[in-house]
Length: 259
Image (cartoon, rainbow, N blue to C red; front, side, top):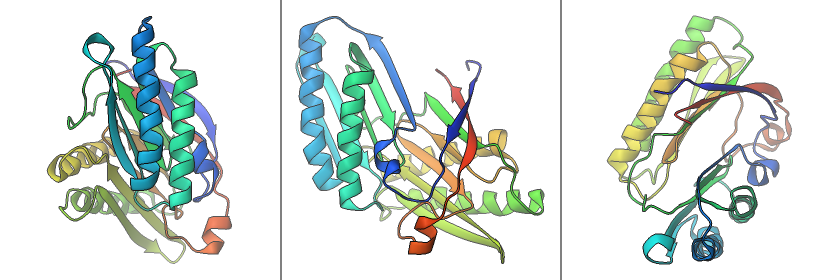
């Protein structure tokens, strides 16, 4: 395994709000190319994904043939409002068209959606290679060992629920630690993989948490097929008006594995 790449980011870890739909968490671009036909295929795939995923929360598309063929996938998190889904997918397509122009493997992660395209057919293949870990630099309040125990049990439930046949690749769980602390956990997968593979993918993401996030009040592990996340504030829908209006700014450390 390649050595992790560490970056320190100033991220607004706010409860669900508009910026989560239009501000990327991270971008990956690779596989340089120079052919106009491949660029045309990418443009066609992005143009097809935006309306389809905006309407159905998930879409795949392909364009071109032979060496210029491109496959794409876009998906919104299943709990977000339809308007935020549409904003997120449109922002993702526009971002990749600009940030990864001339590269045939491109992926962008947002809080509310994920979009990727590639010159190799990845549809239906679980992908846990490139890994992004976002770690809140602040420790949890109270007894850190008690917090870690509760968080571990919570995220084990998330992984189990994500692999359920009826989950649709989305699992949300909570654990009340004490009167002042509730931990919120979420796992979700792209819909091209099976429910069983989804459960395995989220479980693998959850297994990374103790290596990087012990005692931290928030953390997430993102793959290209799934992600796992926990926070000490409500970051998934539905949320109360008071919770949605509250601010949870903090510094996050970014760790990239297998870059």
